[in-house]
Image 1 (cartoon, rainbow, N blue to C red):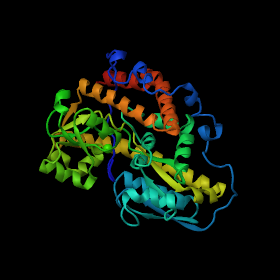
Image 2: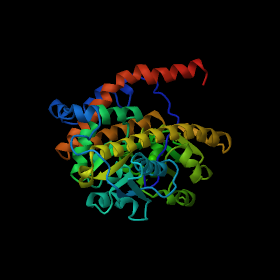
Image 3: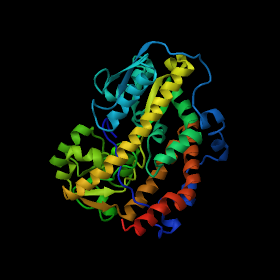
Image 4: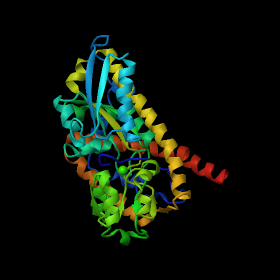
Length: 398
Ligand code: CA
């Protein structure tokens, strides 16, 4: 995502006919990644308070102090979905506190630039931000795990990891290094693979392809032969039109329609390997957070949870309608990314993960915890969501 990107699409279940060994991230292959062992894994979840319940609420007094909180965000004003998430966090805090905690929202560029939000909150010139943690990977690449990573978790999986699997604890530890207290505060769900001017029929077609894909996904694309670039959202259409890029990912049907990519690129590829469930976040200046009463902490935490809930519902509803519009009104052609491309992307993803895990002790523990949670859920998902979606589609002829 740049300052504006994300989304969801109707995802397809994995092929049941595919042998386990051929899956890009089979359990066996995934488990070979990284040299960190069970000892570090165990350290990822040893706190009942943080894994099971409210991540705060261990100190402070009751009551709400009259105060104004400055909130910055990585999104432009009035941006559908992502911007709504920021506005909802601000509004919920204000409303839940009966107007005592007045949150004043500054959209990207109004107080600080989009990507300066982190430093503003870290240093205290702003009190909280709404954004995406993988914007902060220049500080620590492991931040990517708290938004979305290639072949990573879906919405429910990352919620389970954050709230019950030790994810919040590790996130707290990482963010505390920058004087920030983080919470999940939105999720776009699965994003689309992107808009392509020409078809991708094999791995060879990816070589030299100029594609806009930021983050770890872009890094993986580069290692797989493409020329991946990072451009802000407002430059994408022109870049596609001029031929500066051959393809771009953005979000999903709902947000992508507004940018008009379908006019310049005919093929809309699925699935999005790079952002299978992008979680948004709120970060609060840690000094400010520690100064909050129990009641104030509960208000902020639950405002974030309410915004998370609201955004998930919003994208689920609007992406399904958006996809229908793209196909029926604009003649967009859906294409599935070939197996050999996905396999190469998965292989290179593992290499990048291994590099991140080796960077330092905390990065290693974050990766091991994430991987353990993902693998633990794989078998359950195989016989629940994956199997059910496939059966429903067949039986209802969807
Ligand atoms: Ca995206």
